[in-house]
Image (tube, rainbow, N blue to C red; front, side):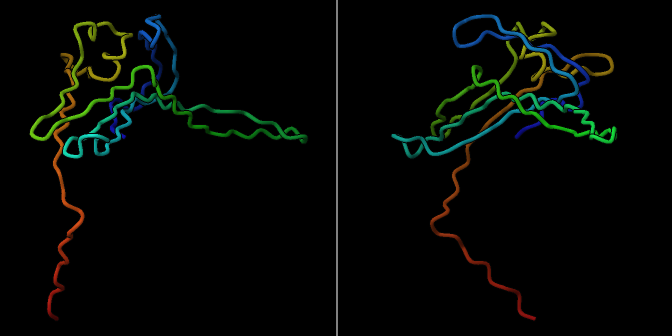
Amino acid sequence: ELVAQKEVPSQEIFYFDATNTLTGRSFERSENLWSLSFQPAPRNPEALRVALCPVVRSLRTILQYTASGDERQIQEVHPERLYDLNLRTEIAPGRFLIVAPSPEGRWPTSLGNRFLVQNGETERFEQVLLLVPRPIDVDSPETPTPPNP
């Protein structure tokens, strides 16, 4: 997981889903993350398949009462994966992937703004994700020689 924004008191996020319908949600006490996975491409072993999915992890407080009238607070972490916005692609050797906000990222309720734009003290900053695959040969690990005492 890659953290995009921490400790967001409240936010509204709007995006177009798989059926091209505008969808919106409100979240309280949350943080925005990118869930990242990668694996060799199925039919191209030299390429890397990368999937990137936005996740909003909210914190909910649940109050429970016992029969004797005592109150208990339970903190529940609830991650919500926005699978409709899942980015999945293959990156060929020597290539890379850049994820950046679109021009609509200036809208305060767009997903691009909530995940890829940071509000600074005097100006906004765009956050860019740069994914560069680096192959590592795991079949022939070099065994380090222990130092002589």
